[in-house]
Length: 317
Image (cartoon, rainbow, N blue to C red; front, top):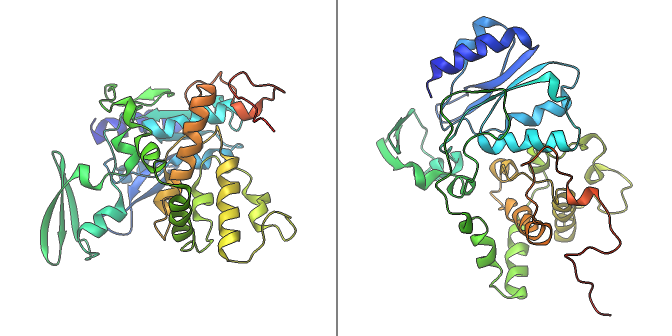
């Protein structure tokens, strides 16, 4: 896929929408940032490379009064499908430009790799990054700085789009690897797992960045985490309250999390919060053979209720 082809397509789509959401260069060479294109002359600002990490679909539920064009990767496209299932967007008012993706990078991993030196430039050569800092250039294999989601990606080509830029590609990642890390984690004893999460959540500063970046957290204006009288959680910042916030957040995403990893990407404390959602996703897969964001005609399991579920055995009291 070439950037010129993407810009040509955006040129065609732009007259049909009020705004097109893509990517442009951010405040430094290692950051891309969302670009809101409303004029043809802004198209030249668009970029496409492994720095384009944001899930741009997150804006769509809040722009229902507009016709919007949006650029999506494979993982992002599951958001579109999930929104359609939950009727959170009017699909006829959204123009989706899909781009087959071979992986993005984790900015945090790149910064760790260069010891947080200021980055003067970054280039992509084959399967490597060449990062230049005041200490000189450093070549880093892409595989070493990809987020975990890319190493197991089953959907490199968007599942739902109006236009596809480039040729569709198939995943070369083994399906049996998808939940391998969760199954490995569950080999630990309950006490070891409890200590692990206590250590991780104790670092949480309750900034709510994980919630704010989540494309499926759509009730932020009424979020119980910020209610003065929620009965579930208070504004205190002790470990119990941190646990409660993350459990509520995760359970609200049961059967809805499309595994884009935005929650984990934006966490300033680098807490592996996506691991909890992935654990719940694995349970949903085993119980209902259901994967969120795949088929617009599906109904999420938590949207239905049966007094007796065929796949759930009641505990004997």
